[in-house]
Image (tube, rainbow, N blue to C red; front, side, top):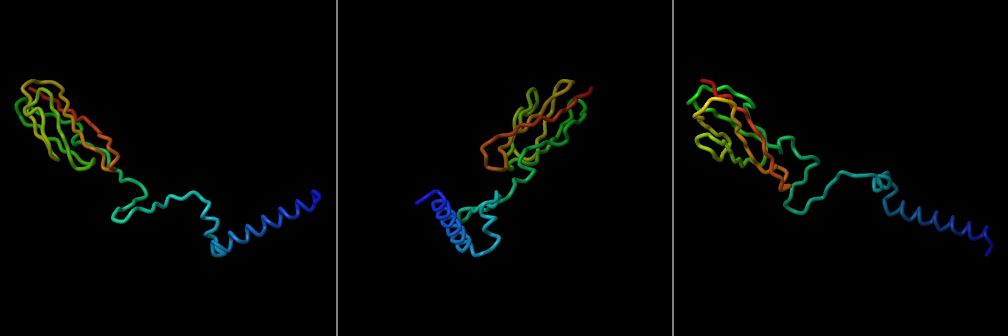
Length: 138
């Protein structure tokens, strides 16, 4: 077989293979979609798949900054995360807590930080932490 015959046989094989693939995919444009990048996810039974995680997967606290008089309770609340919150208020009473909101009293004036932590709402295992500021005035 010479080079020209080899080339013709190769082209015929590619043509037949192309028609076979086209047939397999039903003569439709889905053939082209098969090779395109896809964001579709097929989840196992009982699992709900989503295209993008919600924006509220990261924890936040409110108000971000507040002014409170000495001896008066400062209350902060959390949103986002997976709904489980741990609070940390160094030099505050109480110094720690859990739940969607947290109240703390400080014995001294100045700027205080209240930290809330929560695992992300995307089941990644990541834990986010954010601070709210409490300004204690006389």
